[in-house]
Each structure stands twice: as structure tokens, then as C-alpha cells.
Image 1 (cartoon, one colour):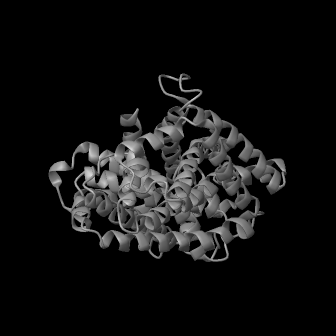
Image 2 (cartoon, one colour):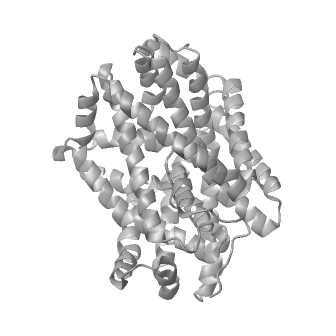
Image 3 (cartoon, helix red, strand yellow):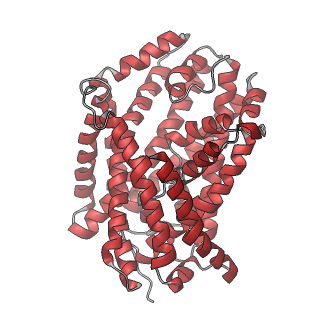
Amino acid sequence: MQEKKSIHGSWASRWIFILAATGSAVGLGNIWKFPYITGENGGGAFVLVYLLCIALVGIPIMLAEVFIGRRARQSPYNALQELAEESGKSKNWGLIGLMGMLAGVMILSFYSVVAGWVLQYIVSTANGSLNDITSEQAGAVFSGLLADPSTLLMWHSIFMVMVVVVVIGGVNAGIERATRIMMPALFILLFVLFGYGMSTDGFEAGWDFMFDFDFSKLTWDSVLVAVGHSFFTLSLGMGTIMAYGSYMPKRASIGSTVLAIGFLDTLVALVAGLAIFPIIFSNGMDPAAGPGLMFVSLPVAFGQMAGGQFFGTLFFILIGVAAWTSAISLLEPTVAFLVERMGMKRSTASISIGIVVWAVGILCLGSFNFMSDVTIFGKNIFDTLDYATANIMLPLGGIFIALFAGWTVKQKIAADELNFKSESLFKLWLFVIKFIAPVAVAIVFVLNL
């Protein structure tokens, strides 16, 4: 078969793809949620279960998404349609790609609002207004921000402009150029903060919180959390990895590339925990403070520590960069689809989808103030979009991608693209993608409902 080329271009190298895909995977939840759920579910014991889940669920489905994208060299909807047709199956499989792209747009609508909070905290920390702040004052600052629609709208709008500008630039001049700058910056910031965490009195307590093997805390629920997070942390089921895979160089090994992405994603999560929790323990705060930790507990901790203003600003810049790289990948699949299917210019497609996301985002930020009384099935608009994507659309997307790759695509196509060094390795992947991965995601899907 003659090699196809994406009309959008291709990554300059395998490492650029690794950094771009890692940027997609590393987001707000990765830097706070993973360390938090690790500590709550048995520390090192949970990490072992999580790594097993990455191996049995995350990596196999990511391999499937990348090979589908690279084979077809198109956006998720078109890629799934083309491979289904090539395998002599129904083109309706393309609908899975459409659902993934819709999920990405919905996620970006509320994700941009949260990223806006981060931008506000970069400014507030940098200008010293959070220095020597008490817990009550920090709580009041955060509550005040949520109650102020004009400030939320300003930051939400700025963030969406930041995302759209990069995506307009295309694969090479936009996403790749941004990745070359932002991902090294993210790693540098992370390890500077890790060094800062090591210098505090609470480093040992933070290490114990995350890595002590406490099997008494490891329950069936812990296993479900591990399966769910291993799936979501790698940006699976929303078309981003498939779209990025379509720009991957043909000569690059999909297997080693995906393993590198999984490794870097997990490394960032673990190092983030070792940067954050020592600061929390040094200040005698509750590590189980949940989502409020980032916007209430940490500002108090930084505000009371030597050099806290500087390192607090670095921390929120780190979170901002992680949010930006993830958001770019959420917009790209739908933009690529509009360029391919509707013949739009990339700039027109990027701005059009950006405006749709921005408008839905206004409803999301209104959930905390002027639209707080509007509910759907008892949830505000922000929580509804979060629930619908995380608990319904992404798991369904993952299940169907596993079934498509394992049962629908001709085995020869999968074998050609994955190009494993041994046939037994391919057979192992095929067994996992056919039976283990879809069943594991289906169990999490049903129990989360």
C-alpha cells in the first residue's frame, strides 16, 4: 500500500510526537488528581495497581488510536470510516470518532474556565496579594472569583485566544513550535518545584503519603479508580491521540513511542506529588483537601513560606502550561475534521470552533454565579458537561475503539502499522485489546453510572 500523507503536515520527528502527546495527556487533573488519589488509596500499593492498569488498558488502547490515525492520515471521524471500509466493514464506525471530537469540544468548554482560574492565580501570586493569607481569606478569595462573572469571562476569553492562535498555526508552525517551547518549560518548572519540595520539612511525610505500601487501603474501589484514571490520564477516547497519530512519521515505532508517552505522563504525575505534598505537610494542612487544595490550601502554604511568592507563581505557571498543551489537543481533531470535510481554511475552522467552545464556556462559568439555579438532572451546566464526558462519552469511545481495533480492522492492517518485533507481542496486544481492555473500561463505565 502506498504511504498516505496528512494534508495537515507531519511531526518533524518521533520525539516531537512524544512531547505533543505527553502535553495532551498531562493536564490539570494529572498534576493534582493523581498524587491525591495515590495517597488516598494506599500509596505505593495503588501505584503498582495503576501501572498495571496503564499496561493492560491505557497503553493497548493508545496503540490502537495511534495506528488508526497514522494508517488513515486523517481526523478521527474520517480515519475510522476509511479503516472500516478498508476492512470491508460499515462506515458507521466513523460515528465513534465524531463522538470523541464532540467530547473534546465539550471538555474544552469547561476546561477553559478552570484554566482561567489558573491565569488569575498566576497574577495574584506574582503581585503578592496572596502573601501571608489565612485559610479563611484564601477561601473567600476563591469564592469571590467564582462569584465574579466578568473576571471569569475575561480569563476564559484570554485562554481560548491562546489556544486558537496556536491551532491556527497548524501542525508545524503552530502546535509543534509551541510544543518545542512549552514541554521543556513544563519539565524545568516541575523539577524546580520538586527541588523546592525536597528542601522542606515535609518531604519525608509527602514521600510516605505517596509511596508507603498500605494494602489495607487498597479496596475494589481503589482498583476502579486506577482503571479509570489510567484511561483518562492518557487522553484516550476523545480523538486527540488519533489526530496526533495521523501526523506521526511512518518510520517511527508506534510501540516504543507509546511506551515513552505513558512513562513521561506517569513520571510527571509522581514528581508533581513529590513537589506538592511536602509543602502541604510542612504547613500542617490536610492532603485530602480535594479540588480546593490547588486554589485554597496551596496559596496559603506558599504565602507563608520563604520564597513562597516566587515558587507559588512558578507553580501556577506550570499548571497553566499543562492546561494550555492539553487544550490545544482538544481543539485540533475538530479543526482537522472541518478542514478535511468542509474544505475550510484552518484559520476559519479554528476560530469557528473556538467561538462555539467560548460560548458554551460562558454557560459553564455562569454555573457558579448568574446561572447557578439552572440544572440538568440536578447538576449545574459545568458539572453536567464534566459528568457526561468523563463518565459516559470517553469510556464509550474507549470501549468502541478497542472493539474496532481488535474485532473490526483486518489483523494484517494492525500488524503492518504496529510492526512489533515479534509475532507473540502482537498476539498479546490483540488478546488484550479484544478481551481485557474493553471489559475493564466497561466495568468502570457501568459502576460509575
